[in-house]
Amino acid sequence: MKEERETIEQVRAKFDDEIMATEGIESISTGLNEKGEVCLMLNTSAPVEQVQAKLPKEIFKIPVEITYIGKISAQ
View 1 (cartoon, rainbow, N blue to C red):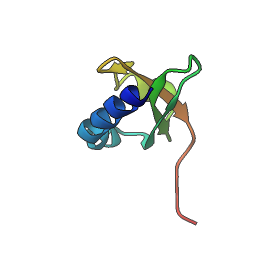
View 2 (spheres, rainbow, N blue to C red):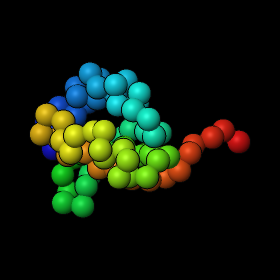
View 3 (cartoon, helix red, strand yellow):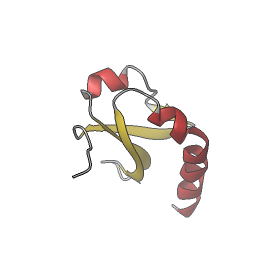
View 4 (cartoon, rainbow, N blue to C red):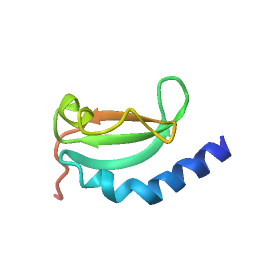
């Protein structure tokens, strides 16, 4: 698991800016998917289907999970 975390952190260092530039992406985190696999977790303000069409399901064999959370704003 530690090796997977190191790999995903390397991928994030390389691709976070590009992913965040995708319309509808609000945040990126590292987590576990329903299968218990380390994954990139993308939170969106746009419907999941719209964002999924713009991004791969995997990045360097790391699963990408997309969740709708709505627009993030400061209060």
